[in-house]
Image 1 (tube, rainbow, N blue to C red):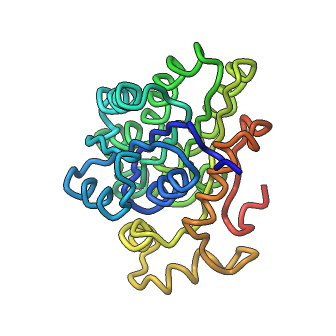
Image 2 (cartoon, rainbow, N blue to C red):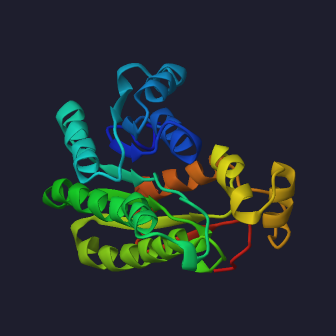
Length: 258
């Protein structure tokens, strides 16, 4: 029996740690060739060494806040593996945590480029390769904050809401071309982003306190794991996920309830 992604090629932004790393490892295990991207070349090479996938995984360095990097990632993938079947737009995150009255134009623009513009540019570039072949899967990693609001992260929240709206609209344009576009909206995930950023946003310093705060209203009373997110990404990327498109799927342990 063949693997679910045999013969497929994927590009993954933010693919060397956390959610992106878990998705990359699962895709490789299911037969895909993968190009992962991150800003830090040294950490990227270390991730490749740890994944131990040989020529099936390549690294492309650079910040997705730059148009040339996100477009270069797609070109690099096609040049090295001959095609692009799956685009996972995982990079993004919270910048400075501050009330709107204190947000600078520079911080607002950074979050726009890091989150929404990265998804827009990555989707557009991927579609230039996917539409002629009439096949493709695009997956944006959004956030449960794209379905609600929280103080002091207005830039991040606005971008994640916008990503979800973008996905719904873009999916309508290419559905008859054999291409699906979806976003996954995780809730609390125990990654290094949790330790570095969630505590700052909530004013808490202990990871255990952050977990308790953000899971108390969930159904499962715990963070979602990167393995659970990567499992759903695999479904969306595979032929079994062909019926999913325009979805903004909550993987938050039952917090948002929609």
